[in-house]
Image (tube, rainbow, N blue to C red; front, side, top):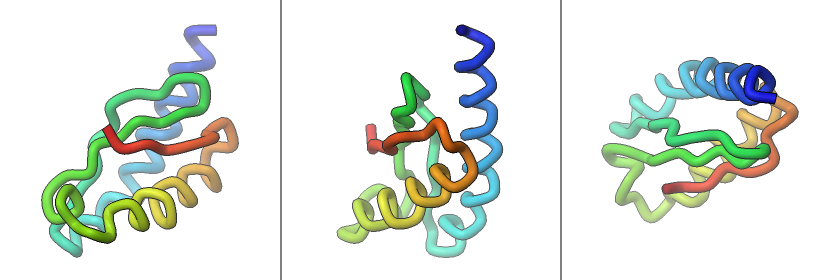
Length: 79
């Protein structure tokens, strides 16, 4: 089971690396906190951390892209 979790976590890390440049263009970033049973916990950083649109960015951009790349992802939450 631990191997499966690590595999999903690595897939999530790889997908976040692909998303990161788009967030950085707007002065933000994302940090992976953990993956547990399909729930990915991240921390939005920089401009994204205090932005009023942070929830939209988290769900409409980060979560949507992660679900496309990693089918095991059920939800993305901000730490």
